[in-house]
Image (tube, one colour):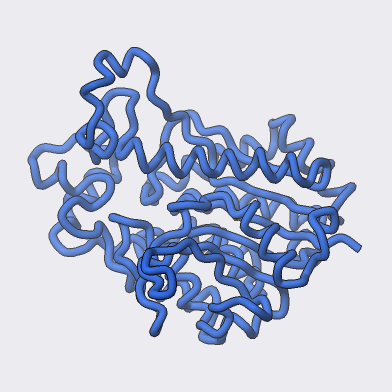
Length: 338
């Protein structure tokens, strides 16, 4: 008997891509109702917690398309600068420049709007009340037993340390993206940051958690569909590194793009590389029981680029209609999931 897990990557507003892909598959094959569990990181965690709470995928798509301004509520003086930068208007002053991208002197956004949206999605119940398996990733900033910070997979599994926290706390903990949102405090457990810091693609953590918590006896029991938030065309071409010795903090962590080099290159590299690694490892482990779908993007989109969500929707709709890769995903779902 297979245990089917739907996995959703992190990626901020690009979660609209994941939601649209789920919507397409659900309309044809009813994948949400027939899933045995859900796993997500960051925005993917919000989607997963919403689905396990029986929120319809159409409502989740609508949320991403229409409530981005509620989710990304600027932190004080960044308001005007952020609005201009989201419209891709070139910065006209230092204040405007500092208002783009991740927060520099303080987090870019408050999390009150995100909390409101999370409550709409998951209600006020405990994580343990979920009727199906659900797991999200977050980074605990201090674990006294380890005398260090620690990666966490938060689930409703019977032996999970965090199963008693609220659904909202799980949602806010997994999506507290560093420099974008403030660290989020969960009771006596302390503060948490976005799970994308170590597992932006939750495939491998979900496999391990499902087995460890007794939902599956072995990896061979698991069938997994993994959906991304779009493949940003970013990297560091050789010509962008004329002097490797110059690559210190001002290159790796510079908060603004420089030609083809993305802003905060180290953070982007970490998130993209770990996501791709998880996909490779899960494919190697599960073989034909693993399928991944992701939309190739023609230009980079930041996780807070909600004012251009229409472009993300268009790219996804085109992918669904024309991509041979998506046709292969649909065929796999029909054979292995429905």
